Amino acid sequence: MSATQLVLIDCDSTLSAIEGIDELARLRGPETFAAVEEMTRAAMEGGTPMETIFARRLDLIRPTLDELALIADQYIAQVEPAAKETVAQLHAEGWQVAIVSGGFTQAILPLARHLGIPRVEAVPLLFDDAGVYAGFAPESPTARTKGKNVVARQLRAEFNAARVVMVGDGASDLEVKGDADVVIGFGRYAVREKVRTGADFFITSLADLPAVLR
Image 1 (tube, rainbow, N blue to C red):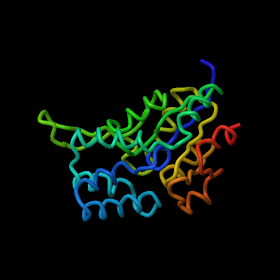
Image 2: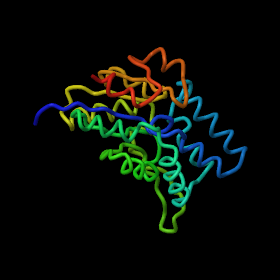
Image 3: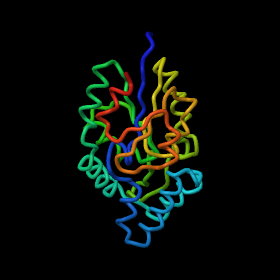
Image 4: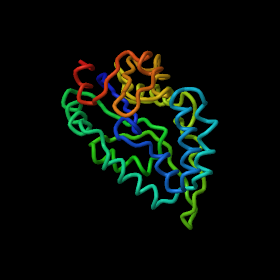
């Protein structure tokens, strides 16, 4: 198998303007939204370990499958303006593209199909036979601190990738330094100073990504 080049792209506040977990919380009213938004912000800025808040946020919300479908629609409605064209261009230039996210698989898969991205590494939510929320897949790497590092290593091996690039807005993306050859910070929707200063490159439009990768 010949070596490939692999670009891993975060979903929330990168491929789409929204944070899916925050939008689920918004459905539960202002108090839940405020609590979840604060936990999300703390994790994205790197002050709180992801595993500390992951289950807690979901237990507050207890989302339904129908609500995940609503979030899927919002991801597509608020997709980053250049995302679809950029993904097509990356494919044309020989890059493999995957979404690597701490978001929820059921909500992200429709966006991936919309963008033509064949691979999604995210967190599947679990539901019982009555459709009631029953937790999340505990083996999901991206539900934990440095989980994206685990995924980056796994995908590098699977794709025999000579070069791996991580693109995203949050601390969990910046952490992939060392397991990705290049980390590109993204600031269209949220500029996190730690990411802006710590990334190898920093862009505010996905339209700029192909040129940076060249």
